[in-house]
Image (cartoon, rainbow, N blue to C red):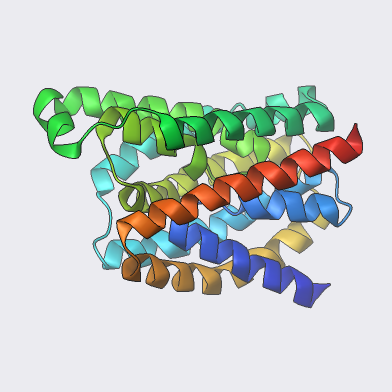
Length: 255
């Protein structure tokens, strides 16, 4: 099982570095298929996010791949939103959690694939810095509320928001999302721990997967630098499809 967890961690790390995902998009469905409860699966995912996001953001910062200001305002929103995660998990059942996650992924995918897109140049000309910061905080808060409660980093949730209102491309959002995860995962971990979601089992599995994910993150960032923006967007579409399919399958089994 340790070897299996390590492989899961490496794969989750690749998705974190390549797409700015917290790993929950892959970890939560896999943990559910291995027999963990939805709450434990989410706890494992959130712990993994701490390792992947810190290590990956250090690599991205050294490569000058993201703006610290933009990441900071997203992170402030993430801290606010993630603080509600423990309350949400203590109220909702497993079926309700998976249903919310499925609905959110379907909506995000629709907006990502078919929503209106604003050009970066147009957004910069017509928007003040203060308004841009407010949008970043709003996007971070909204993402933090749902992402940590569902065990995902939030890249797939914030992707359509930042594309629609700020005109960011998917590569830029991926690096910002990974930095955002630092704030939301730390805040979310504390909230989940105080509400009894994170226990010894979650810590044991989360540490193995988290440490292994650091190797995957470095691979994912390398891949992101090499592929074109068009292919990056196409691959993201498949990530949405896989996430929606695996979650729907798990939900159908429970129902």
